[in-house]
Length: 247
Image (cartoon, rainbow, N blue to C red; front, side, top):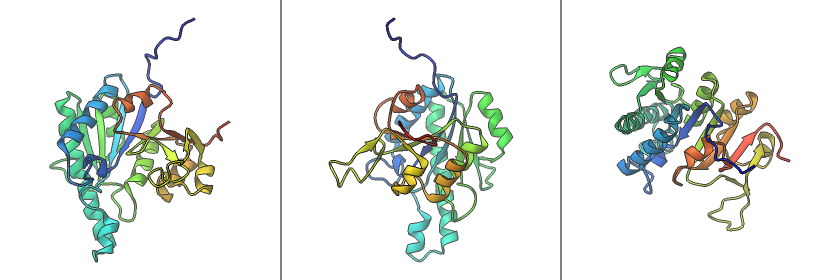
C-alpha cells in the first residue's frame, strides 16, 4: 500500500520557545520586521492545522539580565529589565500574528494591564479552546529564572505535549558544529545522556523541570522554511530529548 502523506498533526497542544535573539535576525539585537513576519507566517501555518499553541519568547535581543549584571547593574534589577524586554517582543509577535488573521492574546507574569492580560492558567486554557494563540511574556515574574525555565514551567502548567525549542542550529550536537566540522548531531537523546555529556539543551533549572515531569523537548532550526509545521506533523526534524534511551 503506498505511503500517504500525513494529514493530521502528531501534536495537538505545543509550547514554542522563541529566543529574543531570533527576533533580531542576523544581527541578534533589535526587532527585525522581516523575521517577525516570517515567524508569524510559520505559526499561522500550524494554527490553521488546528494545533493549540502557546509561545514563550525571550528578550535577549533587547536586554539580558546576566550581561547587565556583568556591567554593574544589580542582578535582580537586570532580570526585571529583561522581563520587560520579553513583553516588547510578545507585543511585536502579537501584532504580526494578527496581521496573519491569527487571534492572539499576550499574558504577562508581570502585571501591566494596559497592554497584556495577567497570567491566569485557566484563562489561558480557555483561549486555547477558543482557537487563540497565547504568548506568555515576563518570564516567570521572578528574577534569577530564565525564559527557558518559564517555558518549562508553562508547558507543564498548560499540559502541552512537547516543548519546541526553536534555535539557529538544526539540533543538538556532541560539540559546537561551528568550531568542529565533524561534530555529531543527535536525532534523539535521553535526559540523562544529555546531562552526563553536559550538552546545554536548556539551563539546569528548566532541564530539571522537564526531566522530572517527562516533558519532551525538540530542538530544531527555526530558519528553515516550514520547519515548525514539519515538527508538529511528526517529521524527524532536529533532536528529540526524552526520558527514553534511543535504541
